[in-house]
Image (cartoon, rainbow, N blue to C red; front, side):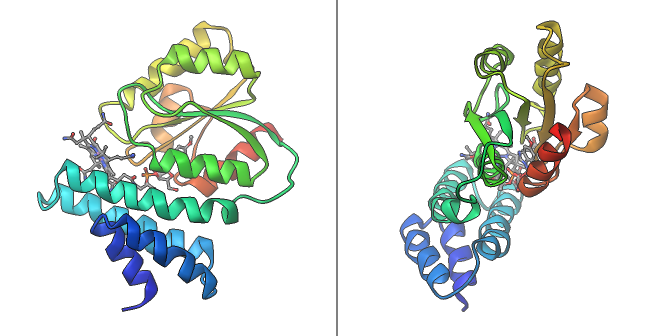
Length: 210
Ligand code: B1M
C-alpha cells in the first residue's frame, strides 16, 4: 500500500489522526501538495460520495470523512498558497443559503489566496443579504458562490438577482462552482463565469479582473 493509498483509506475511514500523521510524512518524502490533493484527498471524497449514493455510507460517515479531509487540507494550505504576493483583488466567497458543504469552497479560497487575492470567506449557508453586505463593506472585485446541492443551486440565482437589485452587478464579477453547476447554468443565471475546480476558479478570477 502506498502512502497515497493510506491517506485515501484514512479519509474513507474518517481517521483524522492517521491523515494528520500521513500527510506531513508524504510531504517530507517529497510528494507534492498538489499530488496529495489530486491523487489522495479529492478522489477519497469522491469515493465517500459514491458510497453514500450506494447506501453504504450515511451522513455521520460523510461528516467524519469530511473532517479527516479538512485536517489533511490544513497541512497543504501553506504550500498551496504562494508567499508574499500582492493582492490581485478582493473576493468574497461563500456557500449559498441552505447549503453546508464547505470543503470545495475552502479549496477555492486557498487557491484564490495562492493566486494573490485577498479572500473574505463568509462560510456556509450565506444569504444574499450577507453577500451584499460583504461586497459593500470590502469593496470586493469578485464574488464566488459555491453550491453542492441541486436544491441550493437556485439560491445562486437569487443571490445574483439580489446583487443586481442592490446595483452592484456592474461592480463585481460573479463566479460560480460546485458539483451540480455548469457553464450553461452560469449563463442562464447571469454569472460572469463558471469554474469546474478550485485552480480553474483562481485562473478565471484573475482573467475576469485583468
Ligand atoms: Co453531502 N451531498 N449532503 N454532505 N456530500 C453530496 C453533495 C451528494 C452529491 C452526495 C451523494 O448523494 N452522492 C448529495 C447531493 C445530491 C444532489 O443534490 N444532487 C449530498 C447530500 C444529499 C447531502 C444531504 C442532503 C444529506 C442528508 O442530510 N440526507 C446533506 C445536506 C446538508 C446541507 O448542505 N444542507 C449533506 C451533508 C453533508 C455533510 C455535512 C455530511 C458533508 C459536508 C461536510 C462539509 O463540507 N464540511 C457532506 C459531504 C462530505 C458530501 C460529499 C460526500 C463530498 C463533498 C466534498 O466535500 N467533495 C458529496 C459527494 C461528492 O461530491 N462526491 C456530497 C470534495 C470537494 C473538494 O469537492 O465540493 O465538489 P467539491 O468542490 C470542487 C468543485 O465542485 C469545485 O472546486 C472543488 C474542487 O477543486 N467548486 C468550485 C466548489 N465550489 C466552487 C466554487 C467556485 C468554483 C469551483 O467558484 C466560486
